[in-house]
Structure formats: structure tokens, C-alpha cells
Length: 154
Image (cartoon, rainbow, N blue to C red):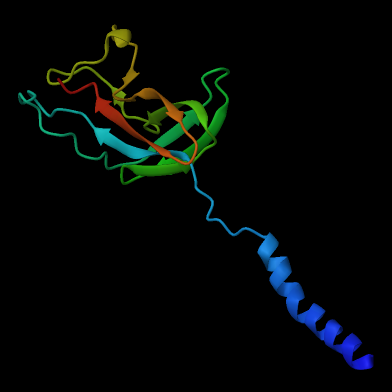
């Protein structure tokens, strides 16, 4: 009788990790979010037709993600080589490229400032970014291209 009790005890101890492990599911969590590139869409001088593809923007820029319903900032990342990737929950988002402390536009014979900066005392930023509305789906990264342009170059 003692041998049976000992055998059952040994088997119970030996099988416990196998049963405990069988209940756990080890799945690789599929992620979702946005990934993309910030593009330099400035034409130096006259733009060629058809225009060549825009190169990645080389320089500091901040990519921000906001909820369109209330404008709440969800994520933000500093980017210097043009490419970015951010994990997000599924839903709709406004993704923006914002150049930090852009150089100010001062009219000269070779540059023109944006329309909102008419007048000698008003100075406007030269670099502008765009905002795009994207939809993030479950288990997928949504691809985004965000142009940054120097509006002072004509």
C-alpha cells in the first residue's frame, strides 16, 4: 500500500508542471499602430515634371498622434532620420509631422513668405508639416507618409 501511495505521489509531482504548462497559451502578441516616413517635399527652385519621389526628411521633426474626437495627445516621438514606428490601440488618429523651432521666414529677393505673413513686421515659420487621419486596425501597422515642406523657397 505504501508503494502505491508513493508511486501516486511521485506521478502527481512529475505531471504537475506538464498540466500547469498546458493551460498557459504562449502566443506572440501581434502589435498594431502606425509606421511610416517623413518626406522632404521641398523643391529647390523649379520643380521637375514629373517630379521625382520625395526623399526622407533628414533633420529633427516630431511625429505626434492625437485622437480626432477631442485632440488628446496619444503618442509623440522625435525623429531625425525620417522613419518612425509607434504602437497604438485600434481606432482613428490624426498623425502629424511638426518641425521643431522652424526657421522664421523673412522676405528677401530670393524668398517669399506664406500668405499669412504679409507685412514687414510679421514673421512666419518656413517649415510646415502635414496632418493625416489614419485608421489603425487590429494586429496591423498602418503606413503613413508625412510631407514636410519649406514654404519660403519658391
